[in-house]
Length: 121
Image (cartoon, rainbow, N blue to C red; front, side, top):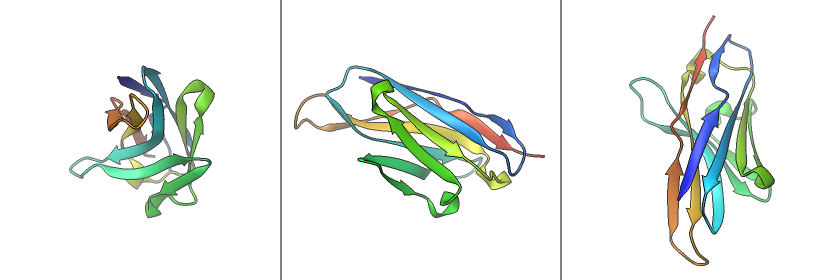
């Protein structure tokens, strides 16, 4: 089972930057993808960015050009660099990982506990 622990959230002014980290621990055969989602009050959880391996990534239109996702495989950690933050970026940010426990095995999904990001003046 994979456990994910996020860190790096906080309060920042509009236009500021934050860097979120998500570290994976536990036992797995392979982690096939890691990503970030967010959920604002009274809204559904939405995709922010996913790292799909070999440097590939997908981003929500709302964050393209401002956010960057990266992954350090040696540290089993995924990062989300958030620049030019806007008030509408305020949300709880969740990390997730798609992993398998054996070669050719089924894919499991793990979620972190979430970290609050508040953008406000």
